[in-house]
Structure formats: C-alpha cells, structure tokens
Length: 506
Image (cartoon, rainbow, N blue to C red; front, side):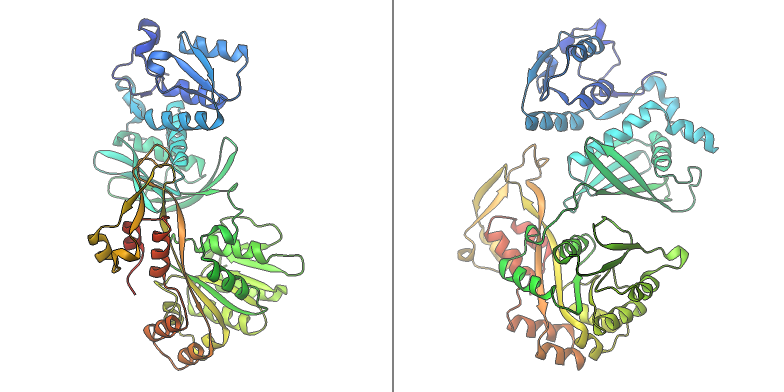
C-alpha cells in the first residue's frame, strides 16, 4: 500500500532522485528505524546528514540505515540527554500530513465492523497514533484529547493542567483514528451512538502506560479522551509534594493517629490521589492492614489491598466500604465521598477505631464541613470523627532551564494585594525547548491544613458556617492557600499569573 503519512514534505519525491541534503527525514524512517535504535538526526540533518547515538549501533545496523535512507550518512556519538532532546525535537517537528494520492484510506462511510477493523489496522494509522502518543509523552501530558470539529480533528494535551494543541489533522482521518483507539481499548468499534469506557495497555521504551479511554458522541463525530497513567512513576514521597516543613510535620503527626478521619479536598486535577498514595506509602507497614476502595485504581501499591469500585455491577463506594469494614482493617482509604451513605459509613468507621482517609471536591478546607453537612451528616458526628482537612491546588513550576529574575511590577503587586517591598523580585521562564516554550515545567502543590481543636469542634457541632470556621482556623495559625502560593512566589517557584489563576484572596 502506498505510504499515507508523509512529514514536512510538499511533494512526495523519491530521495534517490534528489540530493540527500534537500530531503527531510521521513516519519516512517524516523519512527520505525531510528527511534527504536536510540538514534536521532542532528538539528542540521538536512545539510549534514548526521545521525547522533548514545549507544553505538553495530556495523550491520549502520549499513541498513544507510541503505534505507539512501544518503551518505555520518554517525556521531552524543550523550543520552542530547539524544533524548533530539528525539523529542524531531517528534515535534515531524508533524503528520496526508498524502493526497491515498485519501481513500481515510474517508468515512465504513459501516461494518470488519471494514473498520481493517481501516484501524493500516500501517499509516498505527504510525500516526503511535506518533501522537509519543508527542504527548514528550510533553509529560496527563490527558490526550481527540476533538473533531466541522473540518478538522484537533489533538490536544493537558500539560501541567493547561490544554495545548499538538496537532490539527483533516477531519477525514477521524474515522480511522477513532477505530484504532477503540480497537486498542477493546471497545465496540461499530458503536458510535453511545459513550464507552475502556483501557489501553501501552509500552513505549521502558515505560509501561495504562491509559483510561472515554468516548463521547458529538455533532461532528466521537470525542475521545485518554487519561495517561504511568506505572513506572508511582513512588512519590510526602516530602516531594512541596508541603512547607511546618505543615508537613503537622500532617505526618495527624496521619499516624490510631483512629479518626483525614480529608483531602480540592477540585479535579489538584493532586488529591497523589497525596493519598504518598500518605499510604508513608504509613504502610507489616503491623497494619490497609484496604482501599477506588474508582479507578490508578496505581497498584505493594502490601495494600485495593478494591476497584464498579457501580454498574452494584459495587459502589458505599457497598465496597460496607464490605471492607468486615475484613478487619486498621486503615481505610475511600477514593471519594460522594453521597450520604458513604459519608455515614466512613464516619462510623472513624469512630469505631479505624483511621480513614478520603477526598471531597471543595474550594477550601473549611468548605469540606459544609459539604458533609449538605450530605445530611450531623454536625456532632463530623466534629467527633475529623482529625484534619487538607485543601490543595497545583500551580505550574517555573522552568529551571530558562528562568530569569525580574522585578515585580506595581500592577502585579496590586492584583496580588501585596506591597512590592514584600516580594521585590520574581522568577519567570522565557521559554525553551525543555518546557515547550511555555516557561513552565512541572507543578508544585499549594496546601492549606485545617487541624481540629476544641473551638473548631464546638463550632462544627453547633452548625457554624464555613466562613466562621475558616476565620477561627486562621487565628489559630492556619496558612491559607493564597499565603502558601505567595511564599512559593517569593521562593521563585511560580509566577504571579499562576498565583492569581489558582488561588483566591482570603
């Protein structure tokens, strides 16, 4: 079959009929020949024909590459970091485009499952999807979105909590791409009217990825979202999360208590699950039995019994929790408290000698109390069972490779509601290859820990609102999310824009 994906080439001219220095490296050669061998074209490959390696290829491999590329190649040794950066560069530069001579491969109108399976199994489609996966992983994306519109298929990734587009493809490829993703996720390839959920096990290099797949029918076709879970990236320690030292000490003291309930709150994507996993890793030992009920089980932890909640078969959080309390646990972790029944069983477990961890979706720590009350939980039960509530957010971290020190402007100080003298200098990334020209690379947590005391317990039991509880906690020394964000701004970890985007003034 004629190759259907060609990279950065205006016309499909055979390399043997043109000078070697005028032909860019093709995606096929890059993805099938060079990348698996850990070999990357140099930045000036078009003129130098230079290939860079960290581990020397055999003479036979070099001969095969020279024959395949049909060029007078030069091989040069580089560092592993240089090769990694070059591979990342070429994956971004070699953007897939269609060959007009083989458009029939991508047209819609395939009605039967067998035709769709054949379409999804075509080599160009496989290379295209694998290329998009590699691009997303280069950016450390947490999600990949395939979004069809009237004329195009946009491929966007969520990087450090922010959406960024990595490709814009013709709409005609959508049927093929969607079929390929469904085939990988073992979904019904012919069902386009109903939402579907599945999983993809995918290995790229040394990384073993677990991708949750969700399809949703839309006006212009199915929208498909993949959540990327890296199985090799599970070992997170509490000290690595960015908690201030005094708050970390208080939190570590709370989570070693014999019984009670600890809640982690925040919006979706604020790192609540990561904090819970790090907490369980911290306190896990052979003298205690730890059981979790999650939806889904994102990472598997050694020495911990983990249960996958599944509402479709009647195993929700409440049902799972009701069962695991009969398994003689010492510590329970509930993925999320969503309803009155789950909240009631969790609190009852905390009052009967178990240490219980769970999450809620609230804006701040004090708001968790109101949320439980809205679920119908009595105030005296909340006050008796709660040990602490921790609210958290994630802000983008300034890229260390391109960070520059700048003075804080008066306008920025006004927006932040601080004096310029309080933070005369900030750090901001100017953009580089390592951070994708964004100026940010990675994220750091913001934390607000509300510890229970007699006054706050009395307020909760008497039905006080969240504002009153928050004020009492601040008087008692609680550091708010905004204050923690400003501290990280002064430390050069983030920017004023991120502080304003993620937090609110208190």
